[in-house]
Length: 203
Image: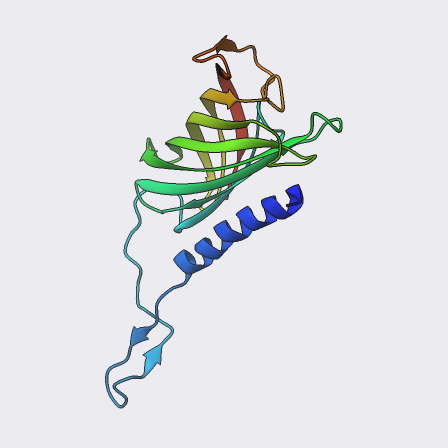
């Protein structure tokens, strides 16, 4: 499958779930028709946190991927995130990743919040993805400090801690611009871990 098709499928799945979560249920009307419906469900309950709505988008850059996109589902203290990213480069170095995770949202003050999540996914080459004799898993612990500029717009920055496990024949020597620590749990396995950084926009 083409890498663009894989990314499109992954983001389409996130958007489809987002549409379902964002859809507001129709309220039943009392009176003439027992099955009449109204598009006005009444006032919404007050939401916890600064981010308005149940569906959020994020664009950011990190030490792993130059361009990343995530769909976050959840307007309360917990959320699910679907993410994908791409790193341009030469024919052999260009790569993309996809993953999912769960996290929590903490309100610090009127304009500041923290998101903490754990994600897991994989990194694949743009040329001939999902082929070869090996595989990999990328796990991340991410902390994001957000500054709420408007109700549906924020800027965030924060550190990450990353672990990349590779087995078989690897596609890349490394997937980060940072220096890494490497160990070999088994003869055909390689584990790299390192602290990273990310900076982005939240919608």
